[in-house]
Length: 284
Image 1 (cartoon, rainbow, N blue to C red):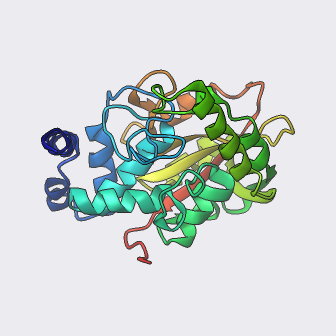
Image 2: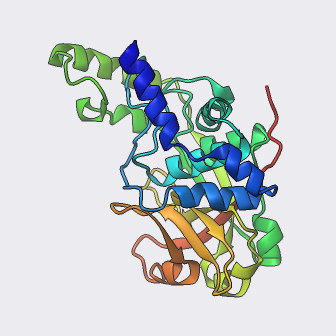
């Protein structure tokens, strides 16, 4: 019990000072900038969050600040930019990461196209601003999301927090995991995007604190089209992205310089889907 309390106190100590940030920044964009800046230099780790100690398949913590991937970085920044205290932000984080705030692997917003973006829009946490920025240059991408195939590919190496469990127990857990995935039907997704070729002309129109979802070409062999998430800020020298860079850390990069690297990518980058964080999310 004492160790649990100490761990909770240490976690809260590593969190952004939300009360000070709220006092310094009345505007949401300013808070998104300040909260995300708190995490600059934090190491990258793919999939650092899970369902906690009670998780059925992933027992990584529900919240942490020592490691991020691109999505968990955006999620935690959003939660701590919208709520002025740790407990409220922690609860909001569950609503961002899980459909209707119900914590389980099956209800986690795994797929940006059919889960993360539409569920957070339905909850009033996000608004799509792609059309506002791109205007008539906006295009659409279409993709069939096959969650059942994704679940079917699960193996014991995907389990998190079960090192002490026997191989027999792990195998049974995997069978249950795959069976849970068999319940999901194929879903048709469509996303608007600002084309990559129009980004240089329109990047200055992207509002501060916007979430940019990197959209790639829909290919049969690829399960998704959104492959990365970033935050976008306007600076005197031009717009930047702040993101958890794969294999590196949370860092800033010039937006146009970053996306210029994808001009000839084998898996073609189509552009950016743009989401604004809403200042007054709906409560269930």
